Image (cartoon, rainbow, N blue to C red; front, side):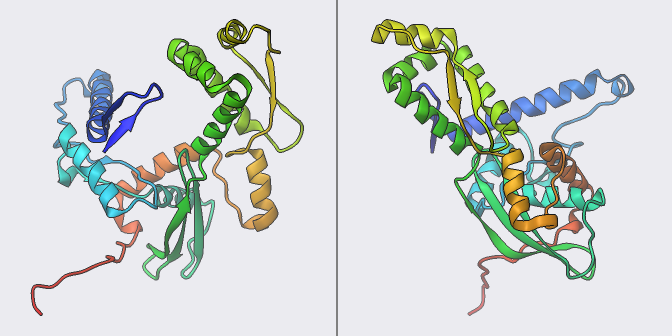
Length: 279
């Protein structure tokens, strides 16, 4: 399997994932060794650190195996790696922080509205206090990346595909600044009024050179993502049953750490298939 970047260059996905994981490991190890209280300690990333990589709930076993292989190639042995679900980590955090109660029989539907996908999964509190998956994960391509792609489609309709491609290739910094500006505006969009974006000067200059006339420097556009607008829609449908961590990413990160200290908080999933050596 290969991944294509925004310029059309292709590279094996396993190599990219391995390089990213290796960079994360090296960056964290560098930070640890610089700490004053750890300067006399010898820490080995493969023996002394248990790594946790959260994954989307809808990932199948093949996807998890792929990430596991990339982590192995980066230097993490199987015994020092766990792949908790992002939804599990978020739910554990909310329980530990007292945002929700954990009475036996209580059921929780976790909506993970991420960058690429929207994942939905249902848990139930068992008698021993652990969480059990009540309904298999479901979801689809409804994440923030899909919103970004719709915005790119708008740019193409305004400027043309060739101009947008030229802009990305030769003014990448300005391109990313425009996309980041769009993402920040989307987060604050409440569903009312209009959202104003300022086009980069380089994009307007390319358009003027190619087409022959100037374009206004502002774009009026409405959007949808993890924003006050989305929250209001959720509350309109579920009323006071909604629990929203103030910092969703931090909640998932801290929840993963809590899970790492006590994996028994989540009951092991039931295998989809089993085998026996006797017939």
